[in-house]
Length: 178
Length: 178
DNA sequence: AATTTATATGCAACAAATTGCATATATCTA
DNA sequence: TAGATATATGCAATTTGTTGCATATAAATT
Image (cartoon, rainbow over all chains, first blue to last red):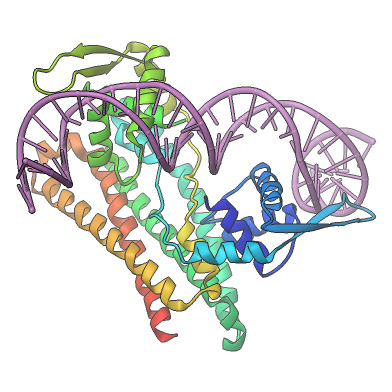
C-alpha cells in the first residue's frame, strides 16, 4: 500500500490535519496521487493506531477543531524502509482507451465528444503545471534547491500531459477524416 | 466499474474462455488495462449471473475443459450504454513519483537504481509497441481498416512510453549531476 | 528425470477504494 | 438573503483489487 507512504511523505516535512493533507494532495501530488477525504481520514486513523503518526487537538475559535498530525520516529523509519524497497511499475487502467478500442460499436460523434471533454481537462492540467514550472524557474537557484525533486515530479506531469494532448491530436485527425 | 466493460469489449467480437480473455488482456490491452486471472474468472462468473454473458462447456481431450463465453443481447446493450456514458479521466496513483518527491530521505543511489529498473521495463514496453506498430503499418490499407481504432490505442502506448523515457532522461541528468 | 512454462479454472481472506450519508460553522457570491 | 464554496471530520456499506492457496494436465526445456 502506498497511500500510507504518500501521507507520511506529506507529513514528514510539515505537520498538518487531514484537511491539510487533502489540500496538499490536490496542490502538490494531485497529478500523480489522488485520494478522497474519506480515504485520508480513515488512513490517518489507522496510521495513528499503528503508531506511525500522532496528533494533538487544536482548538479553533471560528472553525471546527483540527487534529494536527505529525510523523513519529516509527513512522519515519517505516517511510525510509519503503523508500528503499522497489515499487512495481504503475498499473494503468484507462477506461477511455477501452472505449476507443471498442469504438466501432457507437457513432463516431460519441468518441469525438468524449475525447474533446478529456482534452479540456488535460489541457487545463497542463496549464496548471506550466504555471507551477514558471514559478519554480523564476526562483533564484538557491531557492530552487529544496524543490529540485518535486520539480522533477512536476516535469513528469508536464511531459505526460503534453504526450496525452499530442495523442489526442492524432485521434482527432483520424476522427475528422472519418 | 470498467473491468466488466473491458471484458465485454474483448468478448464482443470473438467468444472465448477466461484464459483467452486473460491472454487478450496481455496481448491487446495490456498497456492500458491490467487484470489478474482471479479477477477475470470472478467477473465472468458474476457477469454470467447478471445475464451479460453465457457459456458453453467445451471438452478437450488433452487439456482441462474450457468454459467458452459469449456476450448476450443484454450484454451488448449494457456495453453500448456504457460506451455512450462519459468516463472520468483516468485516476493516476504513481508510487515512483511519491518516492522521488520524498527522495531527500534516502541516498541518491537508491533513486538512481529504482529509476533504472523502471526504465528497463518501460523501454521493453516501448519496443513491444513499436514492433506491433511495424506490423500494422506493413499491412495493406484494406487490411489496416478494421484495426484503425485499436491502432490509435497503440499510439497512446507509444507516445506515453516515449514521454516516460524522455522524462527518465531528465531525471538521470539531474541524478548524475548530484 | 526433473523442472519450468503453458493451459485451464476457481475459492477465500484481506486490503483498498468508492459511494453515500452525516454534521457544523464561516465566508463569499449572486 | 439564499446558495455556493471552503473549512473540518467521520462512519457504513458496497465494490474492486490483491495475495495466497488449490488442482490438474501437457509440452518444452535443462
